[in-house]
Length: 240
Image (cartoon, rainbow, N blue to C red; front, side, top):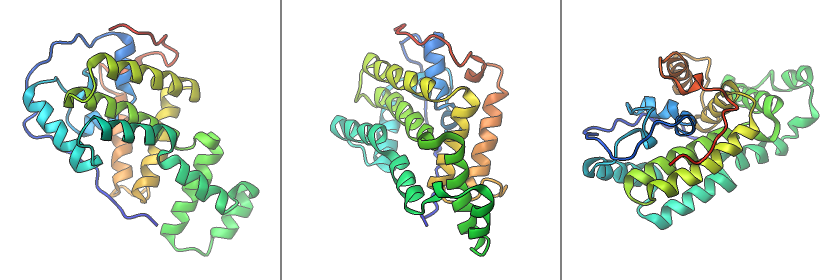
């Protein structure tokens, strides 16, 4: 089982205002793919990367990228982005799912097989089974793809990508997400499956990080300016 991590990131001293206009439906849709994490980080879901690009914010995001992702420069940024897009945690997830041949079980047989396992192991295998049954090979793909878009926003603020580079690549990934899932709810469900898989906890335990992240989803969903109010099939186009 994977080690339990804490992902709460508090950016102290995020300040100032940027110059780029960040108010089109396409940009709001893109920002919506990582709105949960922006909210956790006390950012602004209306802004690319969650914050204005200022000297102080650039330093803060550069430090965050080093501390949480081991990203020190453009080369590291490209490498991490490519890993998320080509492999991510979904490759490990799928390898584990198929290793245990879970695709050969129906629900009744599966529950019987895992009935004698410790609770934590049962939670883990139920997550594997349910998420794959729901979204197949894309069971936790949103976890990787949404974080890729979020990182692109950070890359812009950190100065590793230009504003246009960040949004051009974000647009490409956003279109992939849009084609993969039928709704905001499904995208977020896949993201939460991935978060729980990575965090190795029980989303039904109200003390767990996954439960708290699910509550953040509900918070964003009910915001007055929630990006989830945009139509899922909004035409995504370059507007910058």
